[in-house]
Amino acid sequence: LIFLKDYINAEKVAFYQDSIRKRISETVQKCGGNVVILFDEIQKVVAGTLDILIPIMEDRSYMMLEINGKMVNYDCRNFVIILVTDIGGEKIRSGILPYKERYDIPKSVLMSRVRKSLDEKWENTQFGKMVRWIIPYL
Image (cartoon, rainbow, N blue to C red):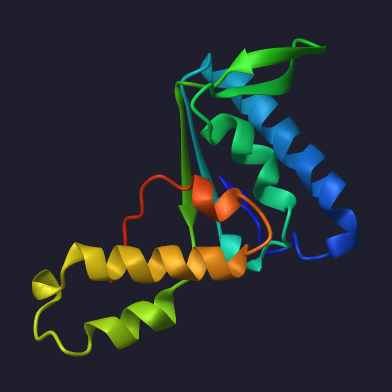
């Protein structure tokens, strides 16, 4: 679990990325490569910080990690990354008003509103576009 609420200083992006890489490296060594990483409050993180995750989210899924004191190009295909956020919350709320029950809301309505919010949040980066699955919770 990595809380991102304090990753807000634009001058420290490289420091934040190193911190995330170190936490991932430590987790890999403890878990043997089958890793679930939860990032909480990603809406508060300064732009560019989460770009460190793009290599993991690409189809090749490799990332430079420090394993046993050495930097290695690590296979991350067995990683699951969960990003928790309220990005898109306001757009979701406005989109669900016409529906009486939450189960009546088309998933496509929720998905498109959250996807648009991600793109707006990180308009100048690739990060929002790398998110494959969105699971809205109400």
